[in-house]
Image (cartoon, rainbow, N blue to C red):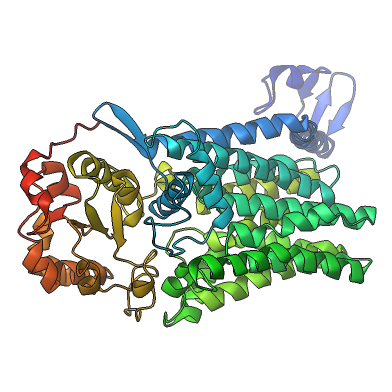
Length: 584
């Protein structure tokens, strides 16, 4: 007898099978029909398939039964690795000392915080009262950092550590929010934690020092507490005290306050008490408004006049911003919407409805200069939580389909808005590395009384530690109220070089290199390419007449971030003494 093809030898010989001709296989003791044998094979295959499915199901269930701390540790560990990569990417060794920086705009807040710690007040330049920041409480945190015995080279690290702790808290709070909807979340918990741990709308803002992380953490804590109070039937004053902090962290966070307030009212069993508590939560914002007017002489921060007032086409820009968000988060949004539609949980629908407040705000103020979704980042953990809940609703807890949906969610987030590439964590806003080195050189080689005019204002001004004129207007009332130039980026489309240079600063840092300053074709290309502010500065009569012929002859600056000295400045006599930095 020959072994049957495709069957193991023991299967072919088991029971003494023998060939007897077409149509039958005969045992030594009794004939067996071929159809019966086919049924045996199909049964074996079904058993094999069932066994594979069973093993996969068992593996998913085993993963779901892992202690929650396993997934928390894994997610926080992943967040930590990505944060460290971003931290060391935002640092450089200059003459043997490693310097660290935050995003260039956040370094503006750092300068305000340092001046407060020094006793000058919340000011850009001592004696000048302009609110060139929009993150009051976060700037106070930065001021507290400057009270510590930390060198200027490392203050950014302290801020990043605070933000890392806040980001880790966001992971824990997101899981806590998930458990409000799914007390036994199973695979939903690791899917949520892993997706959020790699999401640039958490990691990027945290790693580069933005107040966005603090806003998100407080918002999530409020949402969780409101939902827990809904189940317990007892509203706590502390929840509304936390809610009142949001407009202090960011001046435009009243729309985030409104999202949480909508949830609180929609779930309230005592509308009068809820209304009183919400009213009390607005008292800190009212006090801040009055204090701002007393201190700065304005009802709104200078950044409002710079980035919103007089900027054309804001609704169209905001619509494009929302489309990008929807495209980046289309899979989580679809899961969240379908889950809310199939569920009878009012809280799910209220949370999604609250997101429309954020969408309306975007349509009013327009786009953001930064990549990703800073204006909507506080909603990202909520969307991912509702997506995980939706995946559970859709699959009715069928293990394998549910696991596939969770894998799809994590993979989508990882590639659409995740740190799949380290480049996504890089922050080149204002070229902060070159600004840091430039500021260090200015601090070393100029008199403390020297004045500078800057374009990328944050890192240069912070590390130079000199009186600084902000040529793009974040800390200049006159520039902020200029008419916006069409086609420029928000925050970079208001400028008046003749006004700024009319203050006769000793040095100008125009955010361009010397070989382009004298190239008319490059200047025209900048004008057409959205960098009209650079073209306007280097072409202005005052710059051409008083600064252009005096670049500091340091090769690094000539190559990356040229500095120019005024013809009549005392600093011109020391120009040849500037030294090339040693970098690594």
